Image (tube, rainbow, N blue to C red; front, side):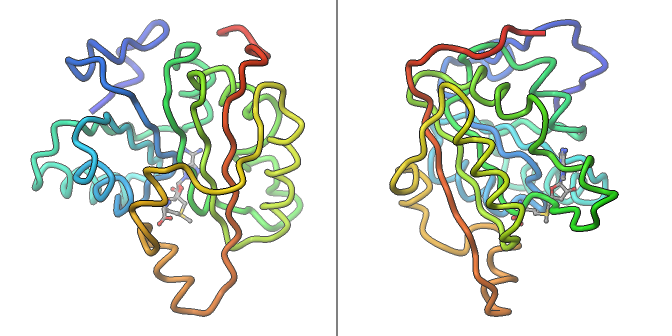
Length: 203
Ligand SMILES: C[S@@+](CC[C@H](N)C(=O)[O-])C[C@H]1O[C@@H](n2cnc3c(N)ncnc32)[C@H](O)[C@@H]1O
């Protein structure tokens, strides 16, 4: 488990995992269905699951421990803060953001994950060719996220999904399963880091 209180600067992934495998981050991993499926399918990739809700965090933590997955680390905190403050430039192979809370009420919009400089910090922390994969059932938030990422220097929208995600198939997050069963439309987009340079410096 990662403890933000023990950190005082950019994170050292090699020290954390004990190897130099690529690192992928799932933001809002919930009960961990995608994180665990990915970690089992791709043992040569390191996965970081960030989940701020303690009750979901406890579930994913127990599931990861039960499977003795050595390529997973978990953080119970706000992903926006962690990405902005602690993730080093160019160190992440992929971000996965599935069904981010849409905060539909206007007065709650400031709680959304995608706002302000967050897209620029995703771009800053991705390595060359790194990807962001996004899914949501909430059309208005989807359009807003796509506009923000489209406008972010260093990112370009992909025509399909990142390979590892595509090969896992459908129904790999708990909310995807739930919403698909309810017949809801699911909006998806993926972006790739280009070599246009980092728009921000580490804070
Ligand atoms: C709608 S659920 C989706 C869970 C999972 N991704 C899935 O598709 O089944 C959104 C999750 O993101 C978490 N979350 C929302 N904002 C977050 C943030 N800023 N940092 C970490 N977790 C966050 C919530 O606690 C919740 O578990």
